[in-house]
Length: 231
Image 1 (spheres, rainbow, N blue to C red):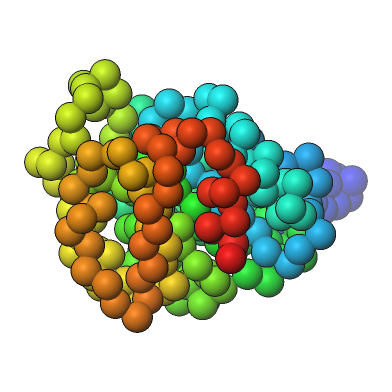
Image 2: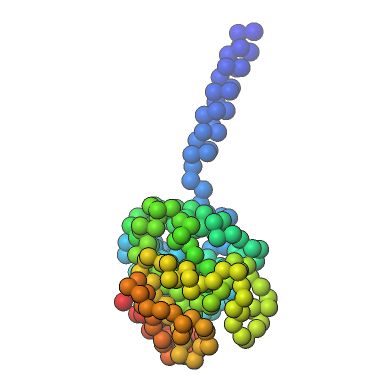
């Protein structure tokens, strides 16, 4: 009877302690999100969050992120084709990215963050800061939008992937969001791209626009793209 009583007392305590330590562990977001993570944490005190286009982890995005790695940046890339295959709300997207950035900034000892979005990644990326915590917002040193469209739906649509013309009728409009932006923002377009924002964006103290040679792939001049981003 004494042994049974002792077991009844100790067992719940053990179970409580075990569950406490399990819940206090930080879960690696790479297990739950479609990510590509740089092989090293990089030598610079900056984390780059890269949001791919709707082509996913294709050759362009791979080479783009490799350029960041060569320059000493620790980089985490979200495959937006997989992540947004099912629609996400801006807040759910921001919650996932906040968890992701906080995890790697702590693990790699990074003090600041650069957010880079390409094409569809740029479309959704501009909405991130507004839904992030004030603490993480303060750590963003700049936002970079490469070939952003005028609107987005936070969902990958096959019609957009195969269509040649820009869709202007999606729910979330980028131009008003860019106008409200309070962070240093760089927008990049190819000189042969036909994108509405390339000609309609109004300059402000936070916005710098660059027109580079080439189309949506910028003649694969990744060195020039990186120089424009980190200048």
